[in-house]
Amino acid sequence: HFLDMREIFGPNESMRGQCALHDFGYCSARPSERLHILVAGISCRPNSTARTGRFKLGTTSHPDADLANLTIDGIVQLEPYVVLVENVFGFAMPESKFDGQSPLQRFLIRIREAHPKYHWVTIVMHGNTFGIMRRRRLYIVGIHIDAGGMAASENVARFVQAQMHSNI
Image (tube, rainbow, N blue to C red):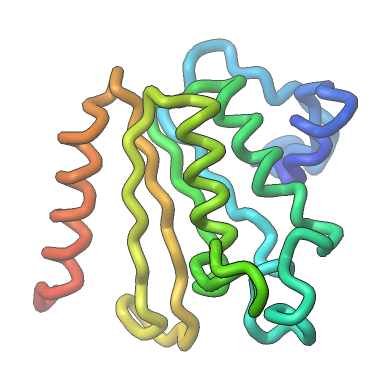
């Protein structure tokens, strides 16, 4: 329901932000109980292959580059059972022509170091899998050990694979 990770997990660490459920008024983002699922779309602007200079300049100098780390901070603070992070396919591509590590790799390394109690699976959805979208998307799913960890994330991957090959 909240619009900006910077407001919630940024330098002031207010855990407050504009909430779509409350006419975009400012509300506490601190849940009264453990979250079942945290869904976050990290800004695609640093990672988009359509951005001029994406592979020359890389992503880390972009003004929205901090949102990936703020998302990790939010995961660590909130410790939801399940995390779903969405981004463009460029998130999985090399940082630049000088640095072969992708922003996705950096994200997964940092989150595994910061919170090793999650098992992560990355799902690539081709642009036309479930509709008319033409762009590939990445869905990074983290499942806490309290919610089944590795076994549960393997089930998620199998389920998505089955749906992609079904007739429904």
